Length: 374
Image (cartoon, rainbow, N blue to C red; front, side, top):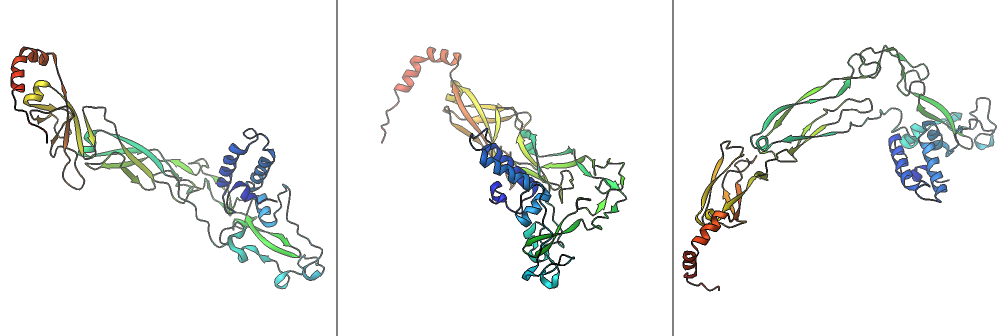
């Protein structure tokens, strides 16, 4: 018989969620509806999932290799070790003076119970949540302090997250959360198997009075306000970490973290950020290009009334004018630059001037001495 764990592609220590995830991933690919004629292979996948997703059947399979739905370990053998008949107590021929040995004490986590009964299982940390925070160029430039309201659930303080008050010790397992049973692991060999108590689901206690505050849920709504501090010069895609800010959950040791990612929300296309620099696309006339000009850009975070800059004479399309120290603040100190990209356009007025003064222009430009290229 094939190893059911290998059929699903999971380890023997896989939990129920990993088994379920593996099964559905295989079902999407190997189902006969997807692969006609694949009935036999999918039947094995289905059988593996049916056994390993059932806690009791999985325990029996781990002990005996038996996959039958109603299978239970045989408790009686006609002969003990050495061929001696077993007595009424069923312990004849057992090792260690006729007493069955404990699988967990001998093999630790090999039989699905971690490192033995004395070691408490450690719960994982909850999943992280991600949130995007839109900021303007002004917010990135000057920084910003704000508050963020977060909806979350926390353990009920009345019942400490249990859902019930006045718990009673489970009579079936005497508060241990586990029950022991005898299993046969070979001819004349019996062992004690320790499993989760079904009566209390391993909690060791029975429910008492229902908690009126959380209605047995164990969790209550408790919004949390986060103090968000955006530093001047923060970048797009920077993240802020709020440790354990997510909701509580009984399956997790600690709540997950909230990770806030900063994104740009500006729609102003005339001025925009480029790392530490601020860029601006400026269109000028032919006249401005020939004799130079002074322009003003609006929307700069540090200059609400506009920032003036000079475009030198002779500037051409695609040339860049750099205004030192007028870019974004650097967290390490100082500022970037504002970079103006020039685009020259010829207006109707420019054309009229050219036509009117064509003779003069031809005289000026064509009488220039010819400089040969080296």
